[in-house]
Length: 634
Image 1: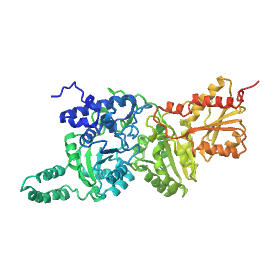
Image 2 (image 1 turned 45 degrees about the horizontal axis):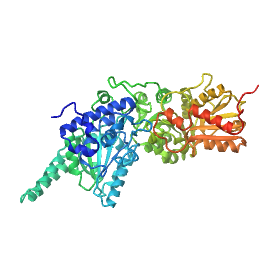
Image 3 (image 1 turned 120 degrees about the vertical axis):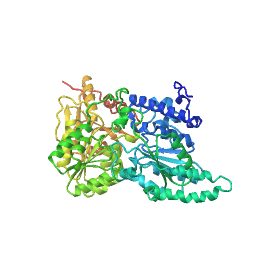
Image 4 (image 1 turned 45 degrees about the vertical axis):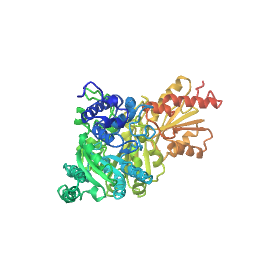
C-alpha cells in the first residue's frame, strides 16, 4: 500500500531506481513529475504541453533501457524535462532556462545521460543512427533510441535518416510519439497517414506470447512454427503492418500503443530491446496531459512564459512584433490578392493565425520543412504571387541553399519575415537569431530591412513587398517594442541620423540595438559628452551615403546584435575605410555561441546594453588621450 504523502520522486537519484518500483509507484511518480514540471514552467516559462505529454513514455523508457550505456536521443529536446528529472537533475530543475542553470534542451556537457545536443527538429533519427553505428563498430550490445514526434516527422531530414537506417541491420529503435500536433496543428500527408494507422493492434503482444511458447518442452517448437503463420497473417493482412511506409523503409513497425500506459510501454520496449535490427514503435500521447489548461489549449501552452498555475493565465500579455506583423499581413492581403503567407508549423508563433482564418486559400502551412518552404515560395513567385515566408531566424538557417539557389540566383521576389532576430534569451544557444545577417549578407539579389519599432515594421514590410526586387528580408526581434525617444521620427529612408551632428562621436547600429544606444546617448549627455547615432534601416545593401556621413566623425562605434564575423559591422567598417575615413573605428558584436539568460543579461554580457555601450565609448575616447572628445564647448 502506497502512502499518498510519501514522495516517490525523492527516492529517484538515477534511472536505475525506477527498476525497483511497482507499477502503482510508477503511476504515482508520473503524477509527481507532472506537478514538478507545471510548477517549474509556471515560474521559469518554457515548453509545457509537450513535456506533460511524455511523462509515462519517459518513465517506461528509463525503466527498461540501461542509460547511459543505452542512448536516448530526444528530437528537438523540448520534451526532455521528465528525462532530466529522472537522471539526477531533479534538485536543479528549478534552474531550467535560467542563466547558468539547466538547459531547456538536452546538452552533452550537462549530463552523461544526454548523448546528443538537440534544439532543432527532425535530427534524432540521423543522430541516433550514427550513434548506433558507432556502438556496432565497438562491438557494443547497447541500444540506441530516437524519440521523435509526429510533427518532427514532417521534416525531410527525418526521412533521410529513416531511409538510410531502415535496412542497416543496426540496433536502432525509433519511438514515434504521435500527439497529432507539432506546435500548430499538424498538416500534410504524413499527418493523415498517421491518422490512418491509429487503430490499436495486439500484434506485438501476440508475438511476445508466441516467442515465450517456444520454451515449452517437446511441443514448443512445432506449435510455434504453426503459430508463426497465423502471426504473419495477423501482421500482413489483418493489421496491415507489412505495407505501411515504415515497414517498406525497412523498419519493423509496432503500434500504435497507449503512450500513457506504463505497463504496456514497458512490455513493448522489453520485447524489442534485443531485436538487433531497426524497429519503429508508434505510441499515442496527449499533449498537455494532466494539466487542464494545457490539455484544452496545447498550442498556447507549447512554449509559454510564466503563468498562474491556478488560472492558467500568463503573466506577460503585451503586444509583440509577431502580433503587429500578423495584423499588417491581413491588411495588406485585403488590398492585394497576390499576397500569400507561408509558415513551417508556426502559425501562432509567427502571428499568422488570423491570416489563416481570413485567407485560407492563400495560407500555406508546410509542416516542419523550412527548406521546402523557401523553394515553394520561389515557385509561387515564379507563378506571379507575392509570397511571405514567416520564420524564426534560428530555423531560417536550414534554408541557406534554397535561398541562394532557388530564389536569389533567379532573382525571384519572395519576402522572408524573419522573426526572433537577435538574442532570444532563455532558449539558449540553439535558438539565438544571430546568424541570419551574416549568411544573408553574402548573397546577391538580397535586400535586408531591420526595423527598430512597430511603425518601422509596417513601413519596411510594405517596401519589401512592393518596392524591392529579388529576395526581400524583414527581420525583427522577439517580444515588444523597446525604448524609442519621443523626438525620434520614423522615416522611409535607408538610414536615419539622430543626435548631435557636430559631435566627434558616432554610434552606428540597426534594429533593436538602437534603443540601447539612445539610452546610452542620454547617459552620456548627463556626463557632458555629446554623440550622434546613425541607424541603418536597410542593412543590405549598405547605403553609400552612410559611410560618407560617418567618415566626418573622429570616433565611429558600431554595435551589432549579431555575429561579428561576416556581419553588417564588418562590412560597414570596410566601406568606411574605403571612403577615406581617418579616425578610429570600433566594432562590438557577438562572437561565439550565446548562452541562455534573460535577454537583458545576455545583452549586458555581450557589451550591447546601454550601460556597457556607454562604458565602451568613455573608455575608448579616454584611453586615446582625448578625454574631451565629444564634449560640447562654448
